[in-house]
Length: 106
Image (cartoon, rainbow, N blue to C red; front, top):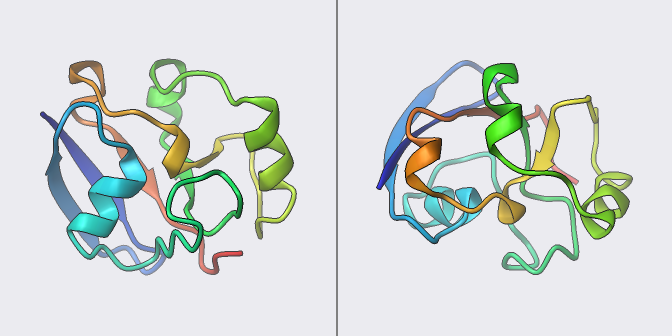
């Protein structure tokens, strides 16, 4: 399990233990963290699970795929550290991961 800190746009923090093998998005949905809608259920077919990965963790979350890059074109306020949380698999190496939600999804 990894402890992941989800930070809402207004600064509200949610520290959640997420099981290895799940995605960061699944951890948020299963724990009712507001700000991650996940309309497509994790199929990388929308951009409603958009998060900003804390800069210190970018190297540990893996590379964006071409499909993820394409879906981020539909997200609002994309930054260099933008990711779709459905594409980040939780592992012990992500213990302490911090992600922030944008003000709007989609």
